[in-house]
Length: 121
Image (cartoon, rainbow, N blue to C red):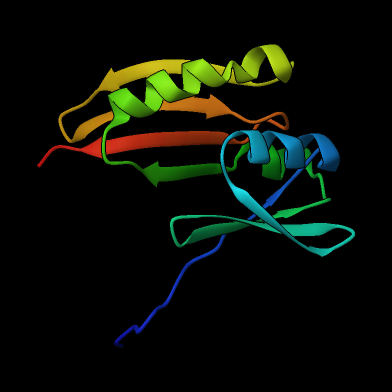
């Protein structure tokens, strides 16, 4: 089967929808409100849906990998945002190196784990 995909947009939930909306705007995503309980957040042609829905098992097992050009630069920009001081549950984990590349991590206010990675060329 041949895919002629245009985009892929995961749906993620939020324990506190307004708090998560603020978090993702602070992280640099552009928000478009779709309804009272759903927004789409975009950056550089990529997007995800944020829902006002919380199921702990789902959130605790949600991970998103975002490939970035330069993870070291991205890490420094994350540090400058100081998200953990603004969002009690946000947690940053420094860059780790692997045989495939390197990545750093960020937990959003609900607990969703973001991987920001750079593949070795």
